[in-house]
Length: 508
Image (cartoon, rainbow, N blue to C red):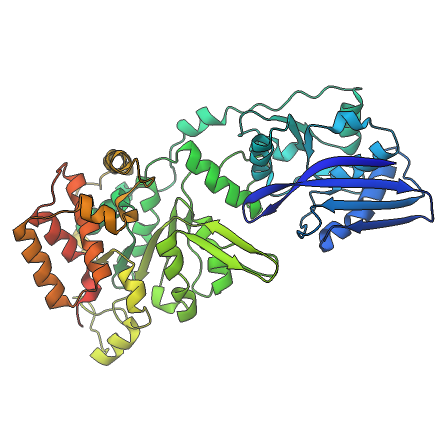
């Protein structure tokens, strides 16, 4: 007898429907699986057989064929266990086929019949809603995640027998409901705050400008000057995640298997700080079974690269395309995956190999050639893509022990949020939300400057040898500075402050 169960698989972060066809025919006992299943999917037959027997049902001693359609796409993951088991029960007439119609089923089985959580439940729920399915049957640990999607009934199950009894009409399971929208709106970043930072007022100003416009930033300073401390607090001044942004970010974490048990949404902007020994695949994504990299895990948040020159050169160079396109494309022989990666890049580095160039308290013994060699580890094209370069000097003792506390993150975040709202309204038709994402057309339209400002910018370009990309970065930063000042036009003061944020364009 033939039975059909709807399930899904994920390519990148997008889910697509998979039809699980189970056929039981007379013949020698054998369990064949077709439709390009990978290893974890092929191994499901042993889990399914034990789960069915240990749940009190009879496993058929006949010729079993399972087809995963469409058969030309490789199937990965353990989420097909539950639909295969329910398909076998439907093929043996334990479950009525009509009860399965309209439900999309996902779940991994343990040998005793328990239903274990899987990755990609949120993407599956979105695919089920878009395809018009009545509901989805998922593991109970994935219920809060899947219930974020409105318009789809999410049926949480703990065991195979519970799922079978629900489909047979012997028990009822209430669809899981989530109040995550209200929880998200009331969420506040916690843990670190800018009140902990003493001194460094010009650096905090640069961080505020970067957060207001979504600009990339590089801090240069001696060891112990507070670069890492400042970087870890920039996420606290970014605007609160919108519901749409939270959905996008959660889909990535769900596919990567990084959601905590029972977690519905990623409620705070991500802050990722990989070690400098990371590989290019770890940073960008990829592997034998492609997974999102650190740039995608930082989507809608911050990617912090400490000790930037210590990263391998090939690792840094692969950042160039994601910084421009805000998405990563991983090409393989069988398929091409695309992951979103719209993030703020925050870098930190020493000014020289010993770290004390320009430090009044320590003597630097590095020659100009050594300094140039050290800084050349970061290529010119990558530096061009970093909008703001700011020096972070060592903090004097009197600033550490005395003086008033720094401004709280909440006050800075309020100003940043106000400016982001202005930018969102400005670029409403373009579909972008911050000045850093402006293209050439938007720069010509929104970054017009007067004769004095033009002369100042021309002098800076000629003296510093700035590229056309660096010149556009200055105009974008100037637009953000003007927005913070509440000015419709860009003045000379805005241009001059933006030029000061291009420190590394100058010769040593």
